[in-house]
Image (cartoon, rainbow, N blue to C red; front, side):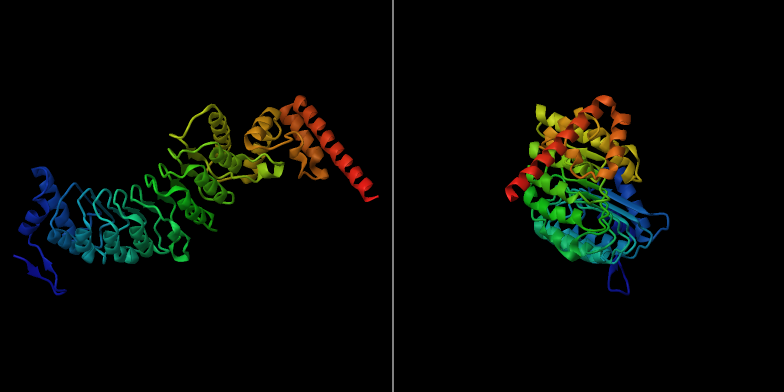
Amino acid sequence: MRRRRQDNEYEFSDDEDREAFTSASRNEATRQLNTYKISRVKRNHRDEKYLSLANEVFSYLAWQKLGYYIARNDQLECLSLRRCNLSDENMSAFFHGAARNKQIKVLTLYGNSFGADGMKSLMPFLQHSHNLTSLNVSGNNIETDGFWWLLQGLGNGCIEKLNLRHCGLSNMSMLEKQHCYLPNVQVLYLSDNSNIGADGCSSIASLLRRSGSKMKKFYLNRCNIGDEGVQLIAESLVNNKSLCYLELETNNIGKEGLTALLKLLNSVETIQATYNCNHVLKWISLKGNPQGHESINYTRYIESALKLNQQFGDGVDYHRVGRAKVIQSQLQSQNRMILSSLLGVDDYYMRPFSTVTSDVVSDYLALVGRESGFSDLYRLILGMNSELGLATYREEERRALDN
């Protein structure tokens, strides 16, 4: 028999709980375990911090009652409902009550069957859950409308880890709105949304470019972004001081995209450009992209730059990393020649001096001799003479024209 509560909600008896929450379970052991866990949540047991249900099919009324039990619970910290056939209707029933819980820190709704309407039902929970740091709604076809409801719910909250893999996303322009830019997200999964494409990368780039971004890991595998999308991502990371892990697997990335990544990590146009390039990014995964002879050369030098970034640990010493890249890329003539060719930089012997002031030339030459030997020093001096001679010739030519 059900008991009527003062808030006009009905509570199942223990016998009704057993019937409602275990009727679809696969075996006796699972039925008993589900009954035990839910009864502890219902009674707000102080040791029940984690509730995980997988592959369960509950009725509308059962989801409604479970939502009420969770609403009254102030001990639960992690809730996982994986592949539980949570439809839009069942999401509405469940979160009608569960939206009042303010203690849950981790919520997993992976592999259910809800869409945009289900995300709309989730929104009140997100707006009130100030302790929520991790949300996984991957494997649900929420599409653009559901993404909008999600961002409305999260707002500028404290969510740190967000998983949106395989959610049918395409239009990412909501990320450009001031109230939807996820300021505290450190890990973002957008993989397996093949309609994001290069257009979506424009909005993603604005998210990565924002001042104070805390993003550390970003997954963008199998999103059909191509070279154009990679170029947008690379440009957004020039001044980014947080992102250290990036996955771009199976995105049909070719020469132009690889060039953008290499330039981001190790530009050789000038010594200053090499010194000031991105030293924070420590890992890029490019598996599943075309692997021709030329792309192997790009990948090799991208990995070399990443290793230098990794060498100095989590606390980035920008001076030491920048100096190491200058030594490896500018002072070693063979590396400078190859990198200049890959990046389309002309005059690879002379270009390093285009922004070097005269008062540091002597120090620079001493560093070349010490780090790379007399052979590179000799070539570099020849390059300097050529550059200075060309500058003198152009100056004389200008004076002759003036006269």
